[in-house]
Picture (cartoon, rainbow, N blue to C red):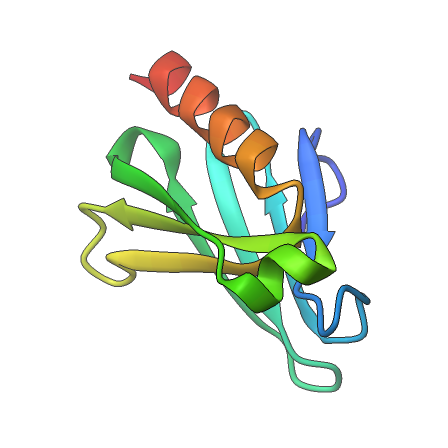
Length: 105
C-alpha cells in the first residue's frame, strides 16, 4: 500500500481473534484497500464513490472472538464485492466506511 496515503483505518484478517494472516485491509479518504500475500503480493482497491451498499455479518463464533465481517458492494466491474473478514470492531468500521462514502459522493 502506498506509504504517502493517510490511512483512517487499518486491520488484518483474524483467526480466533489474532491477526496471524497475510490479508490486510485499510481505508483512506477515497479508497478501500485489500492486500494479500507474503512473498507475492496482490492488491485490490475500491473507490469509495462507487460503493452502493455496506452490511455487517457476525456469526456466533465471530462474536465470541470479538470480530465480524463487513460486506461492501460496489459498482466496480473488477471487484463488485469486498468482504472485510474477521476484523476487530466491525460496527465502528462499517460506520467509518459509511461516513467516508457519503463524503466521497
